[in-house]
View 1 (spheres, rainbow, N blue to C red):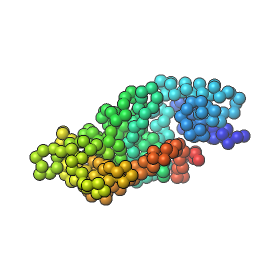
View 2: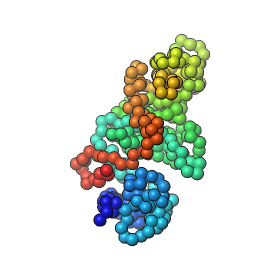
View 3: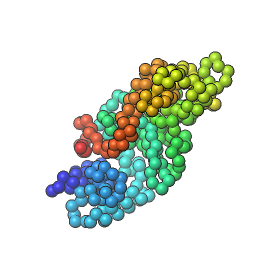
View 4: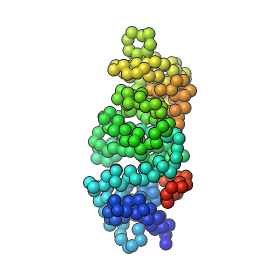
Length: 299
């Protein structure tokens, strides 16, 4: 038996343990094809996933592609019924005291974007919650962002420390206002150089770029009122990015420049390297051995 077939069977057995009685057998079969094909091909292309799906009953690759495609398009496939059970098991098995989360959006086909909150774990990013919608990158609505944040908040253990990082798309006043009353959430979110802020003892607002230090230097602003809505006070870290020869701007609850830089690096360094090197996004991960349930480790 091929390694691909062994993987397909192992995934099928695991899916049945978790989903049997709640999800149709045909959905479990299709999901096993999708997972095997995705892991082995390291591609989201339907043809590649079908070819690498590891099914051994003699069905041709086009047939497997159709099954995967129908599964993806099926309106009865939902996050709550088909994916949430696994996410809950992953969170339980990791038993973390600190969760490093990354907020990101990416373009997908047909003019759509996917908005994702992922858990950064051992040089992997594990998606916890996501939304797909029609739109333009950099312009997701705050309602969508808050929906995902509330979804993840309900998933994580109460009292767990959370470090949230994200690009400038997620620096809106709604997200900042949501974060401020969360006692165990810490954040460092990219913001734009043209954002208007008001520094203490200054009567008028200024663009962050006007407050930047000379090239090569960093700066930390404390007690700033953020945007023209004057949300806050917040702190702003202005960091020099040597490779890009420009400043990065972070809105954060860190109390020092060093803390802000550390928070941002925790969530973004690995992702930045993936993008700079044009690496394929990893699709497999190792979980520590949980004691409460039988599990499958994908390698």
